[in-house]
Length: 188
Image 1 (spheres, helix red, strand yellow):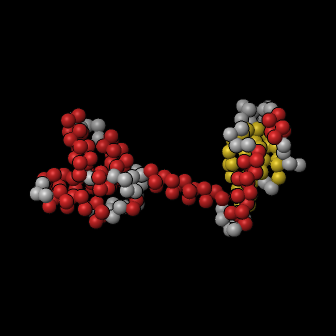
Image 2 (cartoon, rainbow, N blue to C red):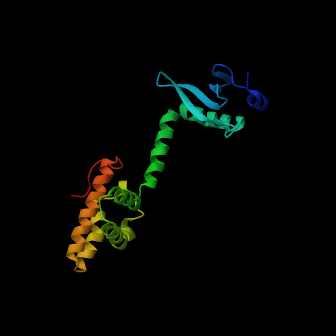
Image 3 (cartoon, helix red, strand yellow):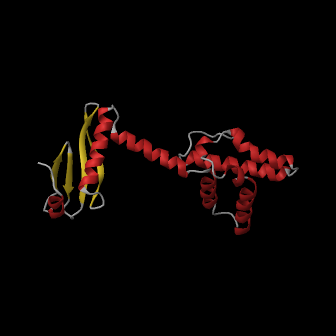
């Protein structure tokens, strides 16, 4: 039997967690601490799976049903909603990993540097690299992209600055590899 908003509101915690089913695989899990979670049970690829739809009251009954229907459409079209959610999350994560963010994270990990040296390193990146590469997604950068601002410094005659920038960019990319943000070192 389908749930009503009144039944959902009235659900109280018991000694054991329990389910209130709504239909089409969706249920409300009521835990012993009083928290209520919307879940969708479904089969995909011959396996039983569970998809979290949200927490009540943040997600109302109507919203949970909309999410259930959207997930069922994905299943009908041959897509696993859990995998689709992972893909969306990974895509969103990629958007956050700009070169500047990763460089600043790398910079923050170098605690052995003196304050003066740390400031000089960051200033050289801000002055020479971030304007060109800062807002770009680190996953999409190629070696030629990374060398472009370094070559510009080199052409201006500041060879030592260019060499240090190359060392820093290489270290940033190595940090990105070690952090699992990119698959391989793109700058050698």
